[in-house]
Image (tube, rainbow over all chains, first blue to last red):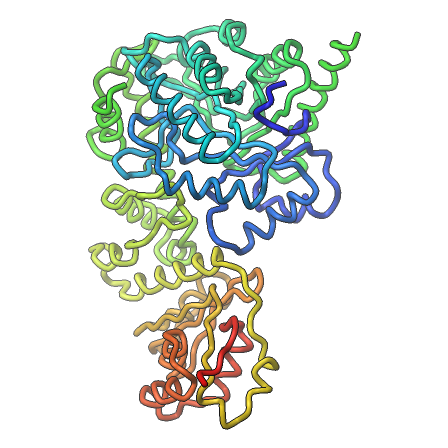
Length: 285
Length: 254
């Protein structure tokens, strides 16, 4: 298991304040909760009161969505300082961010935007990950993106790009199996090939979530990383294969839009736990 | 990616005509407009959605469709400069003041300002509110020298519109109905514990609390309030603000 995280090797869920009362009413079979860092950057109030309460009983993963690590421009030092302050406040078991950019020329675009994979972008991302890890005084996990487009200038396969970042910076990787399936479908590739070439030894956490299905102008299936529905069957199947190779791994079920009631989300986490248990039994046999 | 590639991509998200920036392709089409539109939609609707979440009462007043169109126009002209969207919305009230289609709703910018103060209070630093009994020990002759420190969540707002009543009616706090007495209303926004409250201030109350907030002692604040409203009732206003949780601590000037 990758040392960049101390998350328990169980299933967790993305925390939504709407679920707090149900979660707090009884002990939950949940390994950890993950939050989006930027929602906890106020000074106080209910968000922090709930998070503090939650972290008394459960491990915590802080997941940034606004640092713009994949940008060619410099990292926002103020934002890095805010992340440091949040990590110092909660001492989470894990900190992660995305292989993507979200700000440009002082405008925050609020989306995880893609980058081409070249020697130049690789050097830039490595420099940014180094800067994040030294600023926060901790190792981080970098998450695989979901993509819809191809940059003509790309020269490096995504899995190789991520492997090289991990090798040069010592960061761990956050493997989003839904993103792998979404990207592979969108680019007419086989997700199993991608996973076969992925540096699983660097993986410290897995993300699972639902996606939306639509079509592009040619009528071809186009998947969107929507986080608004249950994990799809082909994603569960890929996850099972990954866990068989990797063993138990901290696994997060993300559901950010069209939120279900708490029991529905909890059942998704329980389903992931079943896969983890099955893989552990196979490994022991 | 050169910075120029990234600039072209960024520039085509909130601006442009939806054309795919040069250098991008896809496995199915060399001009993947639908694919690029996913990013355009995520950016525009993600940011306007952040405004909708921040101003539920204003949205209720004008309706979801109208509010969404207004918010999207603001997003294009005034995108956020920080990844902390809890703060996004500065300048929205001023934008709405100049938004032609909303010009008949003169109170709408103030309703937005009140909702800004509620969000600010929600995320403000925590502090135990000053309790009335804590100043009971101050000798009466010293009271005019009392300096009251505002609670970090507390804020005062003046409006020429019945903004507190309009907010209450559009947030489920009061029944929606005609406003009989269309008069100016000043608001006190507080969050003594976990819940944000909005109080309507009596005449002179805003002048009184603004003077205290600026560090003036009670005697000076009383003069400011009386200058505003001759009928100003000191003990009622002081008790009201204390009970609401408007202060965090006190000091004596001498």
